[in-house]
Every structure is written in C-alpha cells, then in structure tokens.
Image 1 (tube, rainbow, N blue to C red):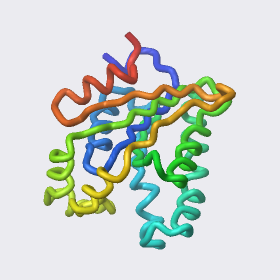
Image 2: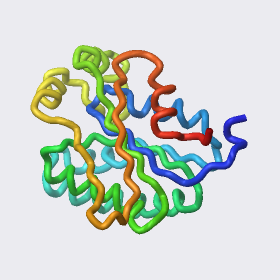
Image 3: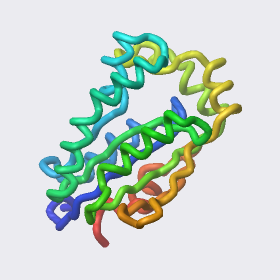
Image 4: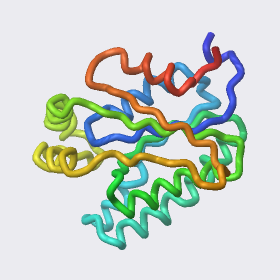
Length: 199
C-alpha cells in the first residue's frame, strides 16, 4: 500500500482565495498518506478563535493570530523534521505587507533545516469560485468562511496570490508550484506536482 513506503518530512501549503477547495483537496491527499505520519492543519483552526475576539482584521487581530500560531508552527516544524508530512491551507495575497510577514513565518518553519516547503498557489475560474462561495453548504459551516460573493469578487479582482521567493542566503528549501482547480482530476495533479509519495 502507499503508506507502507518510506517518506521524508515536508510541509505542503495550498494557498488560494476562498472557495478554491484547498481543505477538501488536502483531506483527500491525507487519505493517501500514512495516518501516523501526516498532519493536516486548516488555517481556519487558527483564525476562528482570533476572529471570535477581534472581529475586524485590525492590528490587534493579527498580533493575536501571531501569538496563537507561533507555538503551533514550531511544533509543525518539529514534526516535519521528524519525518512527518504537514499539510496546511493559507490565503495570502502578494500586495499586502501583513500577508508577506505571515509568509515569512511559514518559511521560518523550514529555515535552517533540510525540510522542503512546497508552496502551491491554487487558482480557479472566478465563476466557479463564486458558485462555491455562494452555495448553501458553505454558509452552514461552523467555520468563519467567506460566503459573500461580492466580497470575493472584489478580493479576486483587486489582489493576486503571493508569489514566494527564496531567501537570499538559501537557508530554506522552497518549492513553488501552481495548481488550477477549475476542473476535475485536481487531486492527481496535486499529488504529482508536489511529489507527496516517492516514485
């Protein structure tokens, strides 16, 4: 079976706008991986407790989010260094200084280690995105997911996903990929692109 093979530690982040199906893709990917060596963290698990305290995206919101995610990122880094595969979701834009800082915190998880960080920017046709964001099932979710199609339209048209670059001193192994999830067979593309399993 797939999870009986040898795996090395890695961190895989799917970064995309709301409605791209990042968490769904990673849930299916997790099923292909050894359960005792795979960790899946949806960014909503970090954001939602902060959102309950600071409703708007204020400086206080981001400061608390850093305090919440800091020790968790440290533990995820340790897991990856011990051979685990860490799967994560994110929604970071290229023209936002706060998002740039949060990307650096992701990169810091592999800084000075042999663990690679696979950063996959997930793209989707806007019409498909709007359909997914506006579906009733999404609005019934316990998570604080975006359900306003107008906000999504503004976000997708005024911003683009962050374009990560390696640190100048090459102290982190960063692999940047892109994935179009507008159609079918997404999981196959994702698994092949980030090499979750050895050949």
